[in-house]
Structure formats: structure tokens, C-alpha cells
Amino acid sequence: MPSQLGHYTLLKTLGSGANSKVKLGQHKITGDFAAIKIVKKNNPALDAKFLEMLMVEVNAMAELNHPNIVNLLEHSKDAHVEKENGTKQPVICIALELATGGELFDYVALTGRFDEPTARFYFRQLIDGLDYVHQRGITHRDLKPENVLFDANFNLKIADFGFAAPVAGKDGSGTCKTKLGTESYMAPEIHARRPYIGTSVDLFACAIILFIMTTQHPPFSRAEPNDPFYRLLCANRADLFWKAHSKNKPEGFFSEEFKHLITSMLQFNPEHRPTMAEVKAHPWFTNPLCNTLEGVQAEFAARKQAIDAENEAKRIAKEQEKLMKFQNPGGPGGPGGPGRRQYKNVAAGPRRSDEEEAEETKHDI
Image (cartoon, rainbow, N blue to C red; front, side, top):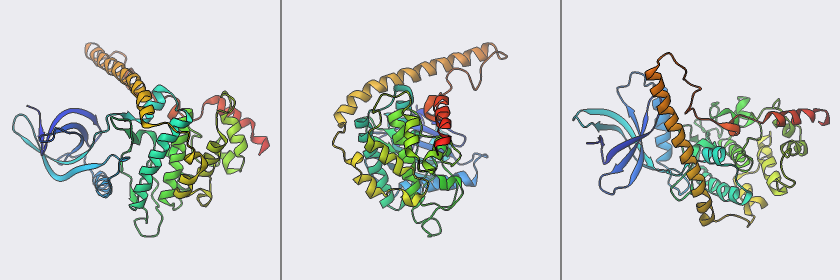
């Protein structure tokens, strides 16, 4: 008899962290599936900071309901997991929409870049979802390909609101002050520990995601003036930035409209970046050359098969590694062994050849 949690029967584990597990749950009445985050309340390692972040996530998502967001279904601070032996474990639980299509990260890292019409299709969904979030007075602050998921029909879903904050700022000043998020997607003002506008840094991260979707690598390692690529944008030498990134790519790989949009969204000075309305009115964004849902469904079904095969191979390798460790405790294996997630060139920063190309442009600045 599987464990029970309120309206849900708990099935397999989807993922786990230091303080929580995510289980596949099936609603007892409707039969619908959900991703259920479960936190044991009597866990001695559970700290106040984690609980605060958890409540921030719940409070933010409780205000949201949009097709391009992983929506909150229900939550409880006083739930119980009833195990098959009848014992009850007090837990905090969050039931979320199940995004069975996987992460944007894996689609790019394991199956290759998107062409511009497909990237435009998903960038529009990303911006539509984010615009709704901002209009509801919330800023995400941790947008990255790992936090962009797909549903069963390959529609994009923004996930993980653990770092969300009010657009007005916690003190009502209109700015945020905490340095958090993922460093390679942070805007320069966050790196500099200056107060920042949440909506602006979200759009900055969106530009990086769009760049990665179309190239399979990031535009720079960190948005700081000493980064070999980002310094070119800081010095107002976008021509050299695009020259460096065009190396080893076919002629005309980047459209002029694409380059203009990315350049404007990644400006060092947040006052020089476009607003949400200006992004949505940009010629690249409004270009009618865009894939359709039916088109991406056919393409992404094949991509997902490749991802599933890769994940299955990793699972088998991990099981074999565990077996080898059991049979030979002193043998090889560990963090770098089979089954470890490989980020490939998406999160590894600019390729060495690109860094060298950027370095050669120093004398031109």
C-alpha cells in the first residue's frame, strides 16, 4: 500500500534535496498527477532560513495562475504522510502542477540549439509568463534554463519561485538588495551589490536564456566588466562581441534583429535596457516567422526521446556504480563517476577558443 498524503497517493520519488523530497502524487478522486514537495517537520537539519524561503515560494505562487507558470495546486503547513505501516509523519507539503516535459536545460545541452523561429516561440511564452508575474507584483530573481520546464504538450512553464520577492522591494523602495540567484545569470548591479530593480534583472536573465537557446552556450561567464566577453558590451563595442561569438558559425548565423535585442537587454546600465513593453514590441519579438505549437510538438517529441534515453543510460550506469561499490568498497567511483550530470557547454562558460578570440580584440577597444 503506497503512502498517503491528504488527497494524494504518493508514488515514486521525482527528486530530493537536503531538506525535502519531491514525490509523484496521484489525486484520489480526479486521478490527476502532481509534483508534491515534502518537508519533514521533525528534521533536525531544518533551519529557519529554509523555512522562510519555502514560505516565500508558497506565498508568491499562491498569487499566480498562468499557462506559462508551474501553478500551485494546494499546500499545507500541517499535513501528515501516512505510511503503509500506519505511522504518520508530520510534514509541510506543496502540490504543484506536474511538468512532465522536462527542463529547458536538458533540451539545449543534450539535443542541441533551437533555430530562431523555435527560440522565438519559446521566448514569447517565457516573456508572457514573466510579464504576468511582474504585473502581479512579483519578481522571480532566479531565471535560468534549469528553472524553465515543459508540460506534456511542450508548453513552457516558469518554475521555482524560492527567490521571489515583491517588485516594490521588501521595504517598499522599489528595489531589491539581496545578492542571490545563479551567478552566471545575474545582472551586473547584483554582482556589484548595488540595489537593483527586480523586473530589470529578470529580463537580463531572459536575454541570457534566449542566447543559450539559439547557440547552446552562454554569452559570457559573468556580467562583470572584467569578463572577456561582457567587457565588450560595457565598452560599447557590441560589434566585437558579435564578431567573437560569430567565430566558427555560418555566415549570417545571428540575424541583425536578434543581435539588437540581445545587445539592448544585456546593457551594463539598467536604465539603458528595454522595458517589458519594449521587449514585446521589438521587431525580433514580433517577427511573424515563428514556429507553431504543432511544429514544436513534433520536433520536441523526438528531442525528448533522446533525453529519456540519455537519462536511462545514466540511471543504469549509476546502478552499476552502486553495485560495484557494494562489491568492492575500496574501488573507484564517486562524485565524478558515471551518472553525474554533465552540464556540457551550456553552463561551463565561453569556450576557450571564444575567450582567445575576445582577448584578441582588446587593442580595438
